[in-house]
View 1 (cartoon, rainbow, N blue to C red):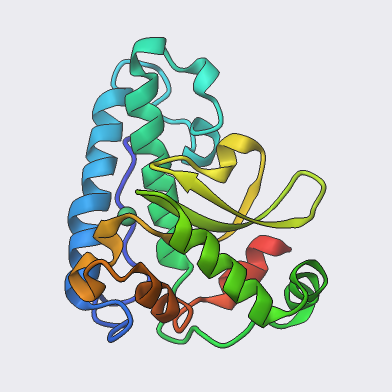
View 2: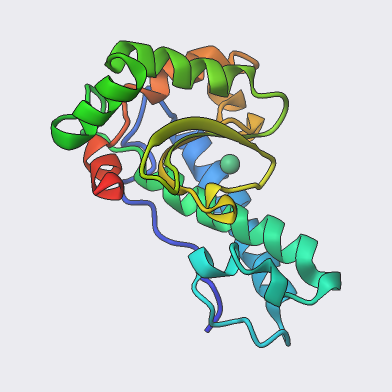
Length: 199
Ligand code: FE
């Protein structure tokens, strides 16, 4: 059973003006779709076609060496994008509540400090990649960034929230202004999804 491009959890114009319909339709319909197609092509004949994507990207030792780069890059991009769509919602924005809010306060000294640190990590990340809030193996929150396709799942960390900082995520709407894109991203963060990942 080949991997499939998931539907967006909202219509392509639902996040405007923060993320435009044009950005979403290209990002989901062209970029993410291409990762899924290339992943399926690379998996053909490996016997790993049915492994769930979360498991696959953390199981590179089971992938034939000559296919590892293609399967990891396209597989991790498939996972990261599927996760990223869910991190946003037309009803998003604001601040988290409950246990997640308490953990953010304890770890970062308040929501505003967390937001600044997440933005700085994502803004200063060199070239293409992803900004993340993750839970590490000891259950503590961390802000990290990963290069290119890399994903926290490959490092034993649980992803809670991500911002795609590849240029294709923001160039149509914000040109080279990654900081503006990140400010707008915070207007649509789906904190209910982040809280479910935390629990
Ligand atoms: Fe992307």
